[in-house]
Image (cartoon, rainbow over all chains, first blue to last red):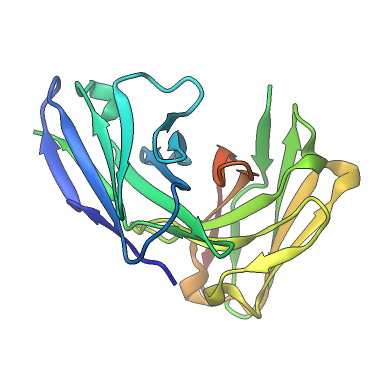
Length: 107
Length: 118
């Protein structure tokens, strides 16, 4: 099965910073990669689908890119509400896999 | 308003069974598959599998045997049943609507906490 490795596992940043989280697939996959944000006690929220498409109602400071087996989620200017855990997810051979998560904390 | 409403928290003893519900409203429930995702305390998200709108279930390798997905289209509800509960099943279980065009989960229930303890 495909493995998704997110880096970093945790990250400290300040409001206004630009941050990038990477998700690397263990083998070549198509562009069916999504990103989710999860805050404590809440379900995940879709941010990006199809590697680079913004989910409904998601602020434009979030963006996604794909390059081979590397996928990135970028937040252009961190807002206080962005401090959360982020997960990538992909589907291959009708099996979904999640990355292990990246916890974004306030510096 | 589109939403998935899950049943409430459960506390069970080891060896017991539990059945969690996930009721859809505000959209055509019978046109979408439902995923089930587990999150153990302090851990990440783990995909358990899905059930299509026709009732065909697919299970992740780690969730075969004691886990059963089912569907009652007449009440727009999906179910997850877990038998022979173990302490390791203590987790939050989420249902999530599947979007097949790009394969992602666009709407999630708030989660059902299952605690297995003697």
